[in-house]
Image 1 (cartoon, helix red, strand yellow):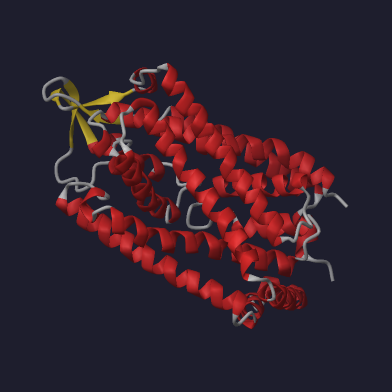
Image 2: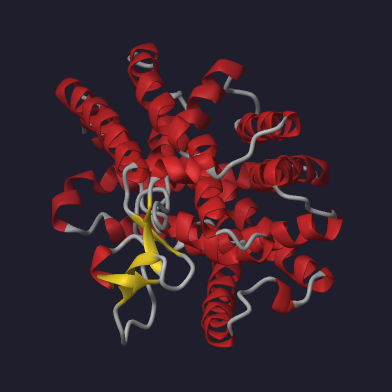
Length: 386
C-alpha cells in the first residue's frame, strides 16, 4: 500500500508548496513593514482619539480610532520608528551579538537532533532539518507549530516515521520541560509585579492567562513523558483512532506500523544513560537561552540595562512566549509585536522606540527563516528525492 508520505511529496505538490511558501514569506514581510500603527503623544498634538468603550485598544486597527484635531494619538510610520533608533558603535556590537545568538540557537538545535538520531543525520542533513523545521514553524500558527511537518522532514531523511514521531515528541517534551523548570526559577528571583504590566486590571488578566497556560504546558509535558518513557502504546492507540477517519481508513495499516515504530524507538530511548539525556536537555537549554538573549542584546544596544534588568527581560520573555505559543497567526505575527511593547514598556517610555525595536527583533529572529526555508526547500527535495 502506498504511504501518504509518497503522495505528499509528488511533483506538482512540491512546486506548489515552494511557490506558496515564497509568496507567503514576501506577503508577511510586506504586511508587517507596511502595517499602520498608532502611538500615544502629547494631548492636543495628535490627530486621532481612541473610540470610547473600547476595552482593549488595538494600535494596528484604524477602527479603534477616529479623527480629532486635538487628539492624543497619531499614526506612526515605519521611517519614524527606525529613525527613533540612535545607533552607536556599541549598538552595532550588540546587534551582531543578537545575530550570533540566533545562529547559536539553531546550532544547539542541530546538536540536539543529531543526538536524538544517534548521529544518523550528518551535519548537513541536520542543518537542513532544523532550518526547514523553523521555516514550517514560521508559516504555521503558534498553536500548531512546525512539529507535524518535522516528522515528514525527518522521515524523508531516512528516519522511520515512527521513530521520527518519537523524536519530535521528545523535542516537545524537552522544550516544555525547559519552560516548566525556568518559570519557578524566574519567579523565585523576580517579584510577580516586575514581570507583568503595572496596570492592575491588565496585570490580573495577563497573570490569570499566563498561569492557566503554564498549567496546560506542565500537563502536556507530563503526558509526553508518559507517552515516550512509560506507556508508548498510548501513541499507537491515538494513531489507530486517527486512522478511523473515513478518508484515512485505507492507510490504517500504515498508522499501525508507525505506532510499532514509536514503541520500538521508546524502548531504545529508555535504555539510554542519564548522561545522554543531560546532553539532550543541555542542548535544549542552550538553544532556548540563546533565543531569549536575542531580545536582551537588542535592548542593550539602545538602552542602559543592569544585571537585574536583564534577568527581568528574560522573565518577561517567558510570559511573552506563552502568548505567542497560543497565537492563531503564523509565527505569532501581530501578537509577538504587541506583547513585546506591552511587557517591555517598563524599560522605555517611548512607544515609538519599542515599536522600532519590535520590528528589529522580528527582522532578526523571524523573517530570515521564511526566506532561508523557501530557498533551501527545492535543493533539499532534490537531495532527498531517492
